[in-house]
Length: 179
Image (cartoon, helix red, strand yellow):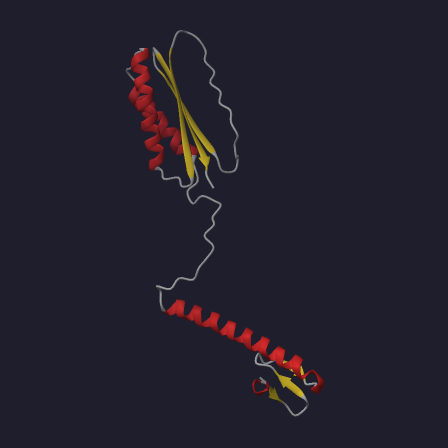
């Protein structure tokens, strides 16, 4: 233990880290404990430097990093989704006349088409809800409202409407961020 300490002429001691220490004879035990501590610290630093150098030389060894991520890499964007919903509604409903049985099956296929379209955008860490209404036009007004808990920083929504001479339709997509 004492062999690892280098004495100087003035009664000072250099520890393994190169720091100057006062040499006091009545504290020999304390010095040997400090020498052990500094030797252990130097060995730990040497192991860490060696590991980093080994990672740089050998690309198969990966240094562990924190992988917990709070933000999405591809956030939900309303504009492209709204335009695609609008095009789907106008293409599928252009020549449709209102019939409750036909519209009931049409809602199922349209919501599946809209959900598949939204998933093609590959917004990561989102769950999607598609809500759709189709009704007969009979000279009346309709107001559709939705309500829910919302994270204004991460969640999003897109909505589009369509109407022809006998049918009105509204489709909404809600993108809920999942951490």
